[in-house]
Image (cartoon, rainbow, N blue to C red):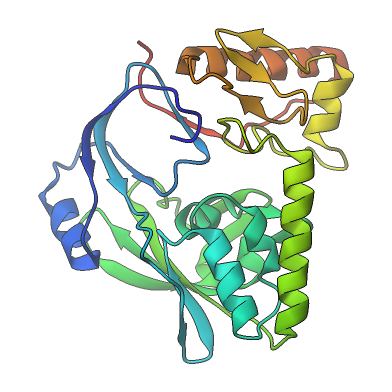
Length: 281
């Protein structure tokens, strides 16, 4: 995982393709806990590990493709690859994906966004698979979508049904301008975020009309440390593990302490973006 902390999974599986994934899901016991992981950039596994099956979707060789005028990407494709692919094909509005460090599956599941844009603004339809290995193509209208939130109407996504891919509708644009915009966004990201240190991106969602980083900094929490994990001095909404020695419990303690302190001092309850899974040690 991108924090370089946490426990192990009981079972880890990297499917060769969608048919292989369907076969695995059909064979798992009905009560087997399952979690899908792309680049592991938005998750924390507790020190006791995950007592179930982790399915790894990312593969470095996976690439977006053009399909009937849409850009198609499997869930394991890194989001920045979609931004670059769109720019190379003269398509606009996907540049922001270059600033999302995870994969398309995670971006769909949490409606990831940055720099004023969100994933589901450009999604035409999504592909999913369920516990029985049944594949579906679902229209955007079948989902309840909000800020850092996407839920299948009926509530199954992430529990009994998972994203396997998506089709993006993008307007024609200026490829050179798109590539320049991507470069600009990445420069901003490098300048403002502690990307050289193990981290999991933004820890908390921004509350309405404000920024989590501003609230955390206003409470004097920059530099707060436990067990090698630290609230970043560069960006207060990041927790870093500079030497790679922190335990997941140290990171979780910081998350809980920051949330409690901000709530006490400002009255704002920050909600984590990070998904915490597994068992305590």
